[in-house]
Every structure is written in C-alpha cells, then in structure tokens.
Figure 1 (cartoon, rainbow, N blue to C red):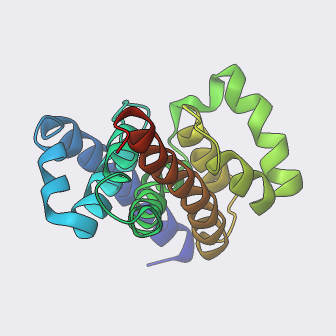
Figure 2 (cartoon, rainbow, N blue to C red; figure 1 turned 30 degrees about the vertical axis):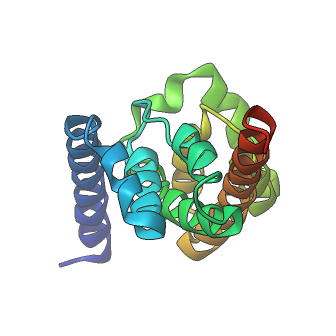
Amino acid sequence: MSKERRLSLLRWLSLLAVIGISAFVFSIRDQVEEFGAYGYPGIFLIALFAYATVILPAPSLAVVFTMGSVFHPLGIGLAAGSGAALGELSGYLAGFSGQAVIERMDIYEKITPWIEKHGTLTILLLASIPNPFFDIVGIAAGAAKIPVKKFLFACWIGQLIKATLFAYAGAASIEWLLPK
C-alpha cells in the first residue's frame, strides 16, 4: 500500500473515530455526572467524555467547580485537565482527517492563521480559558499538521490551568456560601 493511500485510510479512520466518539458521548450524556462518585478517576472520565465531543456541548466545568469543594482542588485540576486534553484529541483527529466541514466557518478562518503562526502558544492560551470554540482550535491544529505530541502537551497545560482555577474557585466559593 502506498504512503498516500495509507494516509488517506488513516484520515478516514480518524473521521469515523471522531463521529463514533461524539455519538457515544452524546448518547450517555445524562449518565456522565454519575462518574463524579468515583473520585479523581471519575472526574478524569467526565472531562474525557465531555471534551471528546466535537462541536456538541457537554459541560464539565460545572462538575469540576463543584468537585473542587469535595476533593483537593489541585487533584481535581490534574484529573480534569488530563481528561480534557485527551478528549480534545477528537477535534485534532477531525482536522487531521481533512474532512472537517468547519473549514468554511468565519471563526475557523480567524483562528487558523494564529495556529499556523504561533502554534502551541495559541493552543495553550485558548485551552486555558473557558472557550466554546476550542474544538475549532483542535481541528485547525490537526489540519495544520502540528505534531500530536506538541498539540497534546500545549492543550494539557492549558486545560490543567483552566480546570485547576475552576476547582479552586469551587473550593473557595463553597466556604463563602456556607461559612463555618
């Protein structure tokens, strides 16, 4: 099999994986919050599933915020940030597949030059803020062929920052709401 044919097959498999993951996560969206009862591994799974969807909203920051008052916020940040970064690989794979319909959206056209010019710094910064368009960042990174290790590391650092801040905010606010 030629290199071009293998790449084409890999792209199609990536696209099918993204569609399958998104459909699966969307189908179990009502049961995902139950994973919170399993502590840090449960938080990891909630974040993984929530961020594995492409374009479909699946909020996990509310769970991270709440669990920050139950468990140690740094542990919650690490678990949720790691799960979120791995979940974002679905967007990256969608972009890598070359089959992303999103390429015709205005926001994609605005983010793509930043990804191509600043690469991992853009990924890190946009992953570290609550950002409903981060799937588009992953798609742009995959389409720009940013190495997956660089994408994953920048995404992980950004998601770690965001999740940790939300967990600490949850821990602080519960004390504020329920004074001793």
